[in-house]
Amino acid sequence: MRKPHPQDRPGLRDLARTRGLLFGAAVSTADLDSEAYRAALLRECSLISAEYEMKWDAVERVGYGPADALVGFAGAHGLAVHGHTLWWHESVPPPWSGAPRDRFAAAAFDHLGAAVGRYAGRIASWDVVNEPLDLDHGRSGGLRASPFLDAFGPGYVGAAFRAAAEADARAVLVLNEMGLEYDSPDADAKRRAMLDLLERELAAGTPIHALGMQSHIEAGSQPRDHPALAAFLREVAGLGLSVMITEMDVADWRCPRDRRDAMVADAYRRHIGLVLEACPTLAVTTWGLADARTWLSAFRPREDGAPVRPLPLDRRLRRKPAWHAIAAALAATPPCGTLEPDGVHGTEDPPESG
Ligand code: G3I
Image 1 (tube, rainbow, N blue to C red):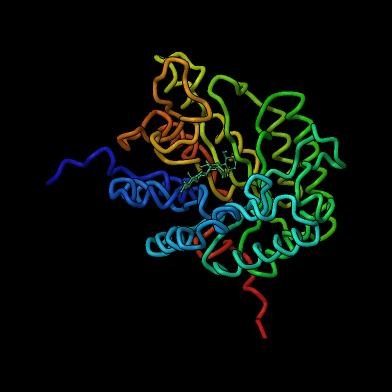
Image 2 (cartoon, helix red, strand yellow; image 1 turned 180 degrees about the horizontal axis):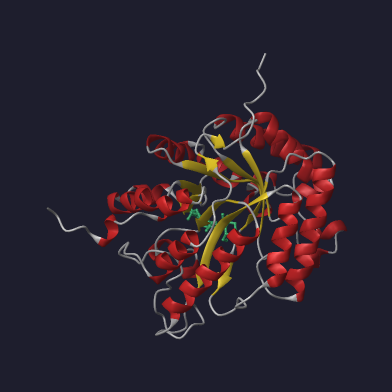
């Protein structure tokens, strides 16, 4: 009888499912070229999110082939797919940057309808609009100055969500944002602006179903207790919305080398525990599954040159303290919302077509 291997123990996906939520990771087709990485994804994840290959600039550049491969892999293995992302100021293809407003608007709608329509019924959730806020831009409601705001005005958020709902009535539609997690006056102001935006849009009937919290945080920088974030999330829940942790990683670039794994793990446990406690949560997703695949290697390199360690698995796909911290946070949480691979759990069947 083979001695059970530590990796045979239940994965984060199994622990998450006992709580009625999904656990996922950002993935690229390059990850799927590795049999070991595919196995780790299948062991740990019930959801995958496209790190790059579903973005407008990626699709414009190379077509839907890579995105199709990701959706095909998920479908073959019963994984949910979180579509990332339809309208984002950083993924506007060069031909459209600076185009006349009416031409940009038409192209933006064409892309959104084509992408959502292509995968209708096969993608559980979409980041419809990514990073709509930047209070430093001084625009009304703290909206970020972007080609979308220029082309459509403040109504672009609602326009995007209505178009996405039209193209796929079953998908969970998510408004995704960064920096809502931090403990600062700027973050307080951004959380307030987000609540105002959500209230305006929901009052106008915009079909927003969930708030995506990217959760790119830094070990040692989050407070041990974060009542402002908990209160914000309770207000989000009060609007009838769920949340998704959509892109979590914990940068260790400023941690002492001998304490970084413990500090990263503590940040995962506290942040995930706080979110799951405060608001119905559909999924927890890390921005990559293993350290060899993190964008932080370039964005937040360590001064000592040591490879960064921000994710649940190490470079050899072994479970780290961060993995165990996520497992502990999931285990400590009462069951909450569910986003099943075939769509939102408990939603009404789509209206009969025709
Ligand atoms: O794959 C192509 C390659 O064929 C080409 O030769 C090369 C030329 O530049 O580009 C390669 O694509 C790169 C892609 O990552 C895949 O590696 C793009 O240039 C590069 O811009 C892209 O960066 C991604 C970035 O978003 C911009 O889309 C990062 O991987 C991804 O981690 C990052 O993720 C963002 C979220 O979408 C939103 N929240 C913040 C997060 C981190 O920035």
